Image (cartoon, rainbow, N blue to C red; front, side):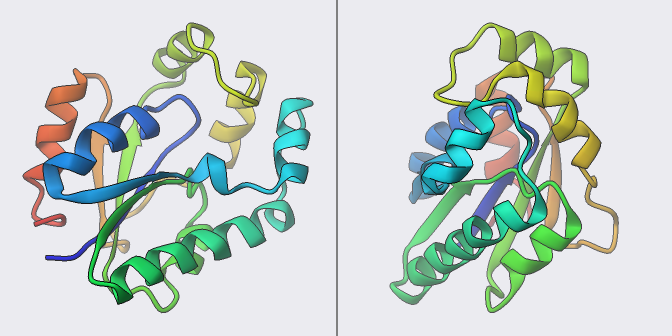
Length: 168
């Protein structure tokens, strides 16, 4: 099966590390959505300024396009993208019937502890609160989303995703 998977969650939830570990497991290409941000967005976040919906629009449209292109070529891809709001996920769903979301869920304290121990090219730990403030957790009406607790090891998370009915 060809998949377009969005690994979603706040900064520090493990999207990149999980994506890199999951991709070979399900024969997919991993793409870090952080690398698809415009320089303007990167500069804004590096300055500690949260992005607005308007800032994110072109980025989300690009992610949706990259996913469609993979599906059109018959290849699976996993893209790390926060997809914090339902409206963002709906935008990504546009013309992407084979899209699936994996919500990497964790508490503020767990993620904050992880974020202060890592280095990121532009995402300071001070923006974590704004990400949690913006987050609209997926509800039961979003049937293309599987929620995975990140309070477990990377191999356990990858195994749980790979065995999910949504991904198979």
